[in-house]
Amino acid sequence: LAKTTQPISMDSYEGQEVNITCSHNNIATNDYITWYQQFPSQGPRFIIQGYKTKVTNEVASLFIPADRKSSTLSLPRVSLSDTAVYYCLVGGPIGGSYIPTFGRGTSLIVHP
Amino acid sequence: ETGVTQTPRHLVMGMTNKKSLKCEQHLGHNAMYWYKQSAKKPLELMFVYSLEERVENNSVPSRFSPECPNSSHLFLHLHTLQPEDSALYLCASSQEMRRGTEAFFGQGTRLTVV
Image (cartoon, rainbow over all chains, first blue to last red; front, top):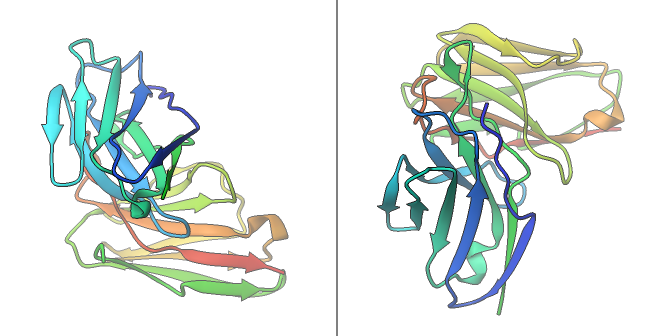
């Protein structure tokens, strides 16, 4: 199971772009990189997923360098409602199956 | 709304009580999960079911007993819990258990053991 490392916390201000980087040095060849967002007292919510290069959707962008040993979640122009914990997950099979396994995540606080 | 519904949303129970948490999904998924999230801790995987068969049990105490009667429903039966079992219990489902599969989570049940 690939281990991920993320900053424990980050602070930003409304309107700024936020980049959260995740390290996953032992990512396997066919592992995907998935990011989830969690608000207090709610279940995590899928944000974006990628395998290589860049992926963009209506919420965020995900940048993955060629060696895939890290990835960066980019949130454009954050607002107060983006205050949440962001988790980086890398696929890892258990008995041949993939089970979403969460680390501590990055607690993002957006200030007015 | 994620398509995964958990009931109740909040539960207070005594250490001698027996209660059950319910999770329901109508997304057509065939894998379902129970996670526990204690205050300021990461999500801990408790149980995994795939096609109604338990495939993972992360050394969870026997006072937690899961049940998956069909692919749409998942229960967590609780008995003689301890105060340290107070936590947010989250249910999730996914289409199948392979890399790249997105997990859909319910809103959780906030459990307080008194």
